[in-house]
Amino acid sequence: MGRRKKNAKKISGVTQKIYESNIKKTEKSNSDKKEIVEQKEENIFILKTVIDVYSRMKLPLVHSTQHRASDDSDEEEDTLELNFWPRFVFVSNLCLICMERSKETCESCGMVSYCTVKHKKEGWSKHRDLCKLLTEVCTTGEGLSLLPKLTADDYRVYRLKLIEIVECRLVRSLELWEKEILLYPRVCRSCRCFSKDLRCCSICGIELFCENHKSGHEEWCREFQVFGRILIMQHKNGYVNPEIPDTIQKSPLYMPNNLDTLMAQLYSCSTYYRSMDCYTYCSLSHISTIPLTTLYSMQISCQDWEIIDTLVVHIIGAEFHFECINLYVWETFFLHLLPNLKHLRLMFIGPEMRLPMVPLNLLTAVKMCPACKSSNRRVKVSFHPGKFYHDFYHSEQFIKPHIVCLFNPGLYRETGFDGRDTWPETIKKICKTKVPVCVTSYTKHEIPREMIRIKSIADVETILEPRKNPFASIKPDRNFVSDDTVPLIYKNYYLAIIKGKS
Image (cartoon, rainbow, N blue to C red; front, side, top):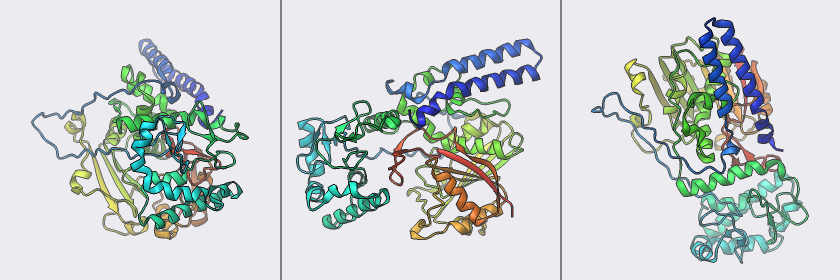
């Protein structure tokens, strides 16, 4: 039906190929019949335990019981755990108070919803000062009746202008959830008409349609089901802390072409994996996509990935709340899966990276497991906020990387940081390193434009043509940039790898 559904159908086939490949490798390289039988049993177990995100939507929240113990109970390490409660996310058809599906809309503006009269009264103080202006915007003059007449690009500009107008009238900046009322307004998904009589999809409970437009939503319905389920569980429980599989490999692990297969393999017989709910599993993929995409790209592009003992990774254009937190997962997915790797150095660079107001030594500290500590294996982290990569390249802090990562950079957009196009100089310096460069995008349509931009600036060879990233985040988010064609996006959804020639 949809993008994710089509890919989901391929899971069993991909897994079967991995299974058959593993058996062939084992039979070819090992004459010990007992070991061959054990390998077969392990792969059969993996086939039986692969569970995708859609199968988990009705499962209740599962709590992690994992605690990373120190090898010395008396030893206290200077490490920091950052705990954030997720912000409120506005969805026009979900209650402004509890985020449950709602049929009642605000009688005045018609833009927000409530599930009960009690919640409508409770939400009035939260909505009151904005309601009057929204009513004027929606009903005065052409208001939102203008939306069906606009092109997709004009529609995006118009919504941003509405936010400017409302903020000017209120004499304050809107909170993010308030902006979402206008960014993702209560209009028909197909024609953008504004009406209080819009009908909501009975299955996902998110998308809205007028009487004349009931079809066309099937392609995205399952993904919106996941989106809605995550929002409700997040609103009730805050962020979850998934239990990371703590499997230490004796030999380098070859990455399969599927996240579900990898997790089934790493969790092995764990009941935690099999009972993991939709929200926890999406969160697991979200915090794992950075190291796993890096490792996957490294295995494709670096010939010595199995034997390397020191690895330097540059993450460019980093955002603290995405690339720079949950640093402990790098130890799990690199040091634990690559036994020959002793030292991993992560360098985060970006002009828009904003670090929290805590001591830098605590931000960069990664608490190591007892096994890694006893063998003197380390993950060393450094942050370089407020810096363009082409400036960092000439600084004393620069260390030549083994691989460079650009996660969802938007290279094709010529109005980047502070309204300036700073990517050309950065792309030149990246390619000058002559190391593999991993580039990802939110959608299938963006990655070709990223490649065109790179090739227009530097002479490069393509190591991996753009393709669906098997280790993309499966946690959906709404898309504003190209919502007319792709309403939901995923971090690191598509992947390409290039390398500078000169």
